[in-house]
Length: 196
Image 1 (cartoon, rainbow, N blue to C red):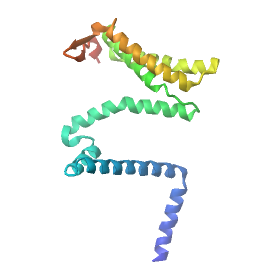
Image 2 (tube, helix red, strand yellow):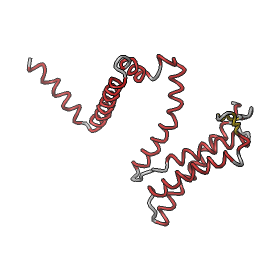
Image 3 (tube, rainbow, N blue to C red):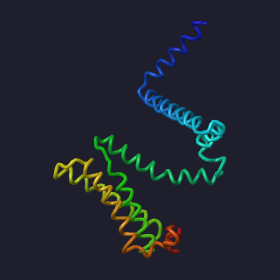
Image 4 (cartoon, rainbow, N blue to C red):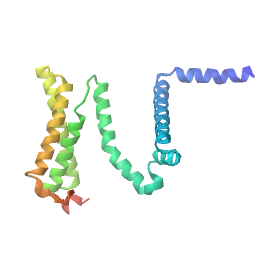
């Protein structure tokens, strides 16, 4: 019995000695612990519905919204995932990009501006959103390189500047792009913006 188990033990010992496996297993364990904590919270809130709600959490809303709802969740999560990758890329180079939210807001502003105000097709709006986000990301880099300003402080300040700038823009001089009726906002998307 011991002869049978020793190669298996040796295999797992070698497997978990690798750095990549350690990091991956740490991530899996973290996800499992967070799911366990969420199940405990569901049990405290509503014991009778806890398992069903936990199943909805695991399946991404498929029982309620079907496959369309699942893809809506993925579509809504895509910008957040991209922002997370942006922060991770900067962190791997030795910087802390706390300004990713501001860059995302400015990129979204550029996409809306060129689609709604200038009636540009989607690919032009996408290119302009990349350019606007990159320009917004260059500002903290230039401040750090030439003025020795912390990228964390300048990034946080630029996040708020971008947020209030975009809010002000769509409430004032870009307000004709937005219909406000009974407290809800809908955007007038031009025919040209929807072209392939």
